[in-house]
Image 1: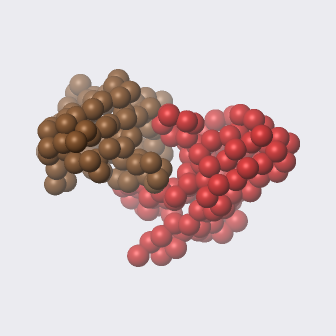
Image 2: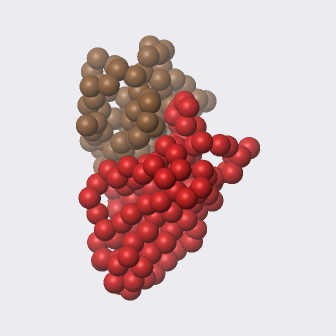
Length: 114
Length: 113
């Protein structure tokens, strides 16, 4: 079975600063995907960024980037130039390649302060 | 384009009453379908997933059941709700062949009183 651990229940950052959210996971699978999802107060799950496990290159999406360390089973999210709209709960998730079954961490509540 | 519909958005039900939550996907065929539950302040827990009509896998023992009567329809049910069934329920789908990402519905907040 897979586990996903987010060790930071809450974090805060000043607007325009950079923040990094941590995530570690445990699996015996070799082919999988890793995700960061954002859940604002509306509770809609929004995909932030996705990483294929077979790719060594770290994924980036505008202000969002990841540091994927496969051997260490670590998958952190860096948010640059933080904006007030980034305030939300962020979930790290692991997806099995064949079934699409996903395991989620317990989330990190991020507050961006003006 | 593909869309996912989930309803109702909120539901308040008494203990012991039945439950039926429905989810439908448009614009794709043969999706994998999922039901997740989110407790307050926690992550998502996978309850059921389905790779085809009539094919349901349960991930955790519980008071709930799921059915897939049509290719793009997924239903979460209970015959008698318990207080512990309260939570935020999310339906999701992934492209069945590739399963590269999940697409979520808008969720149902269920309160059992």
